[in-house]
Image (cartoon, one colour):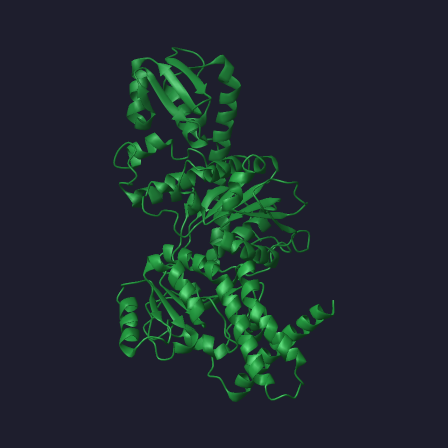
Length: 580
């Protein structure tokens, strides 16, 4: 449990009430259109304001300050030296703004006195946090509008869920990329508990709003935000989590506008991203502005002061800006190198992804015909084993092809996060789909179809930094040395744990000092579920060791039995459908 908080200190001097007597140097009023406070006054106060706060300069005799609780404190500090008269219609609004600025200052002081590490209350969370994740939870608890920017694979999802468990700020809305919707559903149900039970999770569908059923956690993907723009802010969400918040790095879209309106009405806003900034450093302004509007001033003043000039997108000193964001409690970032001692050498993560139902059904047509032939055969028929093998191969390929676009989207996110990826598959048709989907990353291929020279060239290109993606056949991995990789992704599964272990070890070799992430991407339909069970993989944040020893005859026979049992279940389902 968390340690008790230290008592709040006295209010900072700059937030004391400004004098209401003596010489008045000008007026303070609120511009409802631009959402800023405007000082109009004598040259001495305007000159000082623009010298101290260059972004406030607008025109002669006027200075503007964006209406953010941090900046309100600066305005009040200025008024202590140069008293201003607040416009009559704005006095109540100023009193509220100043109160919020004071509450923020007290909250920042309270956050500084939080324990270094926190854990969720007993009975609200099912899972064990590592020490650096406990520190992340403490940060999120002390900073209700913040960006958790840990490198990929350090458990941002579990830290965000631990925060919701700790605060009980439900109902909450999770805004996620389309290919991660299923994974968030499973992770939420796995880790979160509400009054001792599994949380009620509901996923929004379609662009047209409709009445939602009662739930504890709602999930929507970014592509739907524009359709729900007006409805979501009225639904009473107490917290919102934006996963991969770099999706909102560009303003001027309905998606961005909807996210901004949604965040404005929530008590807690958490952004998650391993790479909140892409090509232009100023994109961080767009991201952070969702979390806490104008906490970095307005766009014009931000680019004027932090970048190379008005409207310029290149941040002049990224390290200085990062330090400011951390100091203000707006961002926390840890890298794998910083927490490497806490991480096991190899981590296996199982993630649920979607598949294309239409493609899967189409590819399963010939498989269903083969099932019909199998059903007609005598149980002892010699042709049965060959037919079972064809059915198994056909269903696995249908599963792999149908989920290939979603696997590609997942890998794309890893590559954009700076990871170096080995992507494993089994069928040539699946690897060809990856070739088309991921062509922009110029992947290397080792599929069993290449000559020895071509295979060596692919290894050299990946190891030499010519590409950060190498697509490899599960059965062509033996003997490869690819320890430059930081991630291993299984787009398709094999029945044998030893095959996966061998594939993982292409990256986890002598000379590899990093902690390797091994992602198993599992679809809800097709062969994946039974294969996942056969491999001993459970959907979780961190799973135990699996298949790390050389296969013995018993394990090989076990894999074969699991494959045959799966065909038996397929056949039973087929025969049951035929009887209807």
